[in-house]
Length: 218
Image (cartoon, rainbow, N blue to C red; front, side, top):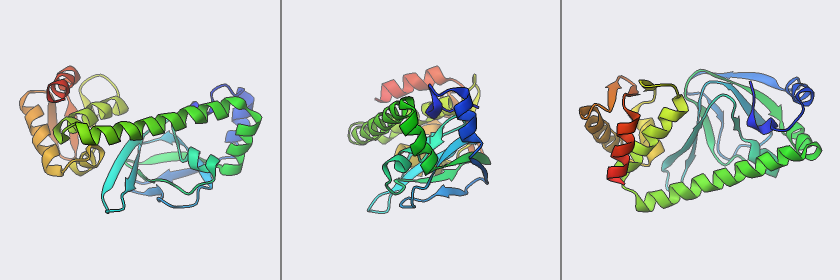
């Protein structure tokens, strides 16, 4: 398994760091850490997919992203010393390697490439938040639903048919839409032969068709 965080670090150094990490497993729906928890470790995802979401001051839940194997969870809060900025939950049985914050900070001091990767990750996180904010004001909910389904198709990968094993409430949180809107949009897409709906899952049959639908709506 390769993690982006270790780009540019000699293999021997990476193995030494991983030898200090502990393995942690999660059941579907289990929380890895909560918003406002102390940031004492970074999680290297080795198996499964994890949902990252925040709760607004008004109590609304907003899902920001889904991360899978080869990605990391909580790295930026560890470096800055801030508390956790989001809640992370396992969407399926998963596994992470838990690296102490002190080890990550040591790596950043000893290997400039780690600091460079962290800066790029921070820029990407800020860019994603900015994109979601602009989208919430300029793009209708129906289009956001189609966009999130397309993004999830890439997350879950492979050639069509691509199975997205998420319930519609989870899709709604990612799109910033109601479950009723998600259901209506997916039923329309199913009628066009673009997706197939099943119990607790959406199957993408025609990603190109979904892309065209997103452009029509956008």
